[in-house]
View 1 (cartoon, rainbow, N blue to C red):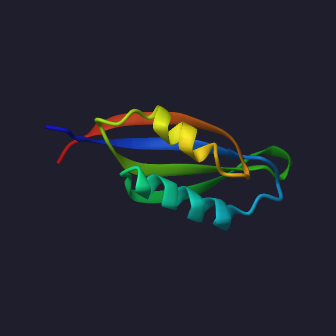
View 2 (view 1 turned 90 degrees about the horizontal axis):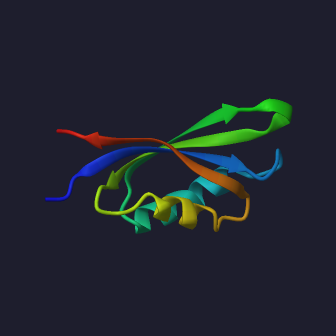
Length: 91
């Protein structure tokens, strides 16, 4: 029986002029198409006007998290994606 994992990914934007709302929309479409659920975002302020998006989601355990990284990196305004937390969800 496959379970659900709680995953947090950190998305580094390519620059201070990156359109956060557009990135969120594209990321949500990609992640939902791959099976992610309950997707939410937090903006993390970095130095020199740069921002990162922290993406929280429920992810099917049977799928590799490398898929998240590979698919999100196809978005134009994203320079880097890292999985910063992965936990098995219960309940």
